[in-house]
Picture 1 (cartoon, rainbow, N blue to C red):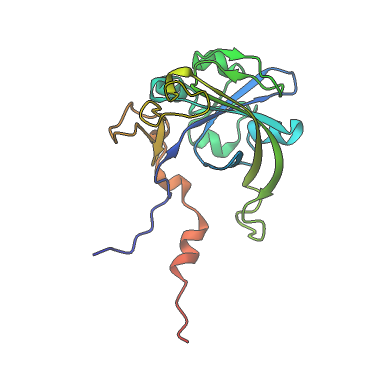
Picture 2 (cartoon, one colour; picture 1 turned 180 degrees about the vertical axis):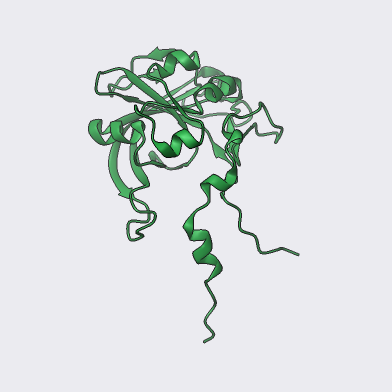
Length: 227
């Protein structure tokens, strides 16, 4: 029997992506997200509208989506509570974020030159996708409490770079799902495909209640109208 529930977040498990973008001073920004899905060679991501990544993508119209495997969990964890924005917003300060300018350095990752965009790729990530922004759309634009907080970007993939170690033997254009081990985030914690927790996650130090949305209270007041 199911029960009616009101979780603060609906974070049921998605792959982690490291998004690399270019700052105003042409240095690289690198940020982890996990609100992402793909349709063909298009991708949709959701991200905080005030983040450095969103600002950079709006200005430059491009980014690189780098997919870490479970082997990069420590690097992702070192980035988790950092932001390229300075000063750090009060909201992020309350969640324990700090400003870091050299994101590649703090993560211990290596930047590689891209072929079609200016933003760099992450050498250590087995999957790297160079993309351009095709469209953007604010979330909850008609809601006075939530408007301006989150933005979605539709991205078109221009280049895909794959580590040969995750390919089907003898085929350059097919990923072998038995070899590819994506890093998964579920309710702020890191997992592999086997469902076992990998590391203590920095994000899990943030109480889930801090993500609680006004939509939850609205949902409680929704009733089914008999017809």
